[in-house]
Length: 175
Image (cartoon, rainbow, N blue to C red; front, side, top):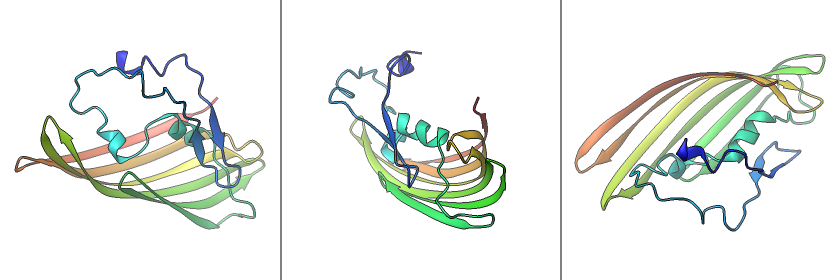
């Protein structure tokens, strides 16, 4: 619970670009000033590969279908964040009234080097995710999201390599 104490019962201002659907967290000067050092040597490991803050949560709650898209249309969005390259391919599967179903296929890959207790760690990760998004086209609010992600990689340190393998099956219903 201590790790999440600065995230609970806290107002966060997020700006959503109405054309791209990208969420941007409004940063404050003191956002990092009050973070406690907890001595965790892996603190920030996942942050070194991309954002894990509230703006990611906002991107999961809102989804804007680009204007003019019709059933069967495909569009691609790519980004690079902290040495990770992500490519998202969307397909508008169906529109039923104000509800649209969008298929999502994402690939992400990258490598990063960080120092931990005076030793260099080389980390490589790659993932593939398939899923669907059910979104209200009038409000751009996501009603349901489901996905299956397969992640592989390795952490190399001091001549040793530790393989990473993970599978995540996620279903989120928004009320």
